[in-house]
Length: 296
Image 1 (cartoon, rainbow, N blue to C red):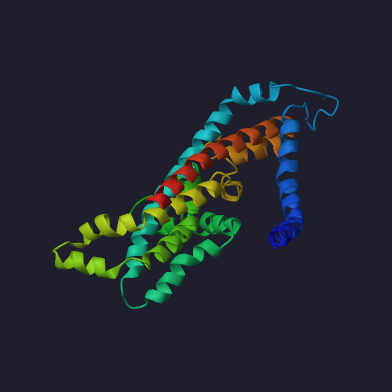
Image 2: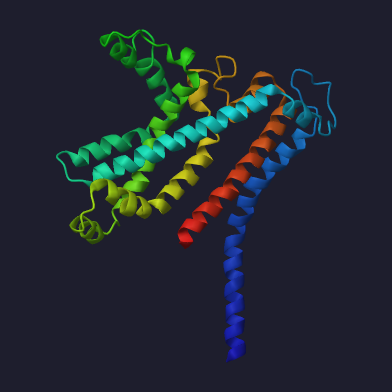
């Protein structure tokens, strides 16, 4: 009887493995083939403008890229963009989640309107902000400035990176709000009422009850947003094209410049490897942070 059960478990395990094998194989190929090709090209001379110059380049592509001031400028812009968007979305999402948890007239409509920007395509969002909101002549913000006696501002020339931060934060704030608002649904109202009966005010309740309750949700928001924010491209491409100069060029856009404008596939591949290393370093810290919060 024992041998029969063991044999049945073995057969069942083999069947499960056989069913999983195609999906696992496809997933591995989906990840390994592009990564392998990127690594291969990063060690090759491969410039489409110089087809005769081919062969093994060693670490020359990496040396050229690491000594290029544009790389460090792009990495700095990437960190500033990610950092400021995270601050705006987490703080704004937390405050809006607390607000929408309260009862007021039209709350359902307000929730839908607040979440709706997340479902707009990045390219469309960038075009809306560029041509309708931040246009120096016909934009809504220019009209508001002029209505109070202030001069109109050419956002993408005077404050290019700030403009990109505003656009991206407007897109990702609804995502943070959605996650945090969902987490607010599990807040123990009896605990809040007990705190009010003990004399705690709204500020004390927020900092000592609401905020600790949202800690795990905030960690998840930071992890997911940071993964996507490291690869922001469409908003920069549509609005500033990385300029003026390199003012809004992030790591993803720098790789685009090297690959599709300079046609230097080898250097662009080296930039891709550096971006992968940076993303994995960030992912390790984020996973540890989220795991720690889940254990607490």
